[in-house]
Image (tube, rainbow, N blue to C red; front, side, top):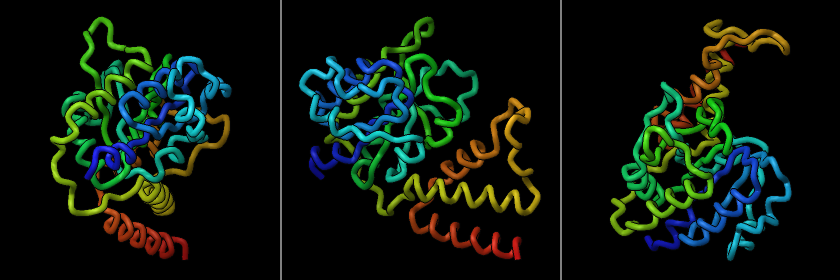
Length: 249
């Protein structure tokens, strides 16, 4: 597969970005390295398309897709990778250094779309955002100063992906389930668990919520760890629909 076709399958997703200049800088880095598909989720500043920092990348910024949720932004991707500075003691995900992560991402780009998520400048990706990820990558910054500027982080990640693309291994033989299929599977599994009494119904508005991770985040992470093919995901969806029908009849 050509470099151009491979790069066409990457989606850079910026979540809750606060500064439009950072979105512009990310777009510029994308254009530098040949990754042309930018998606933004709930940007803090709606006028981001006019960012002066997008030098030479105005067309890319103009085409950027806007989404209301991470689920919508990654629905057509078969691998979703989040970025982290490892400020959390327990990230609840497998974390790869950027060198290893780049090799895995290049392999998946040979056969399907990959979403690379970056969080807000202030807080990074939330736990709910991270629950949509299959695993995380980190840039090995020094311990006393872990966080990077958003535009710089995007540039470093894309450089690592672009610099050695010819060494990517052969694509896997089967088609992976898309994020949309995995989200449907997560929703059906939660419905089945509640219908069976294993999980309680969601708390009402205004009710106190425990500090532990919500069930939907736990189940979403579990489903992604299964690494399902598209055929297996469809099989599980059919099984869960039948279970739900029996539970409710």
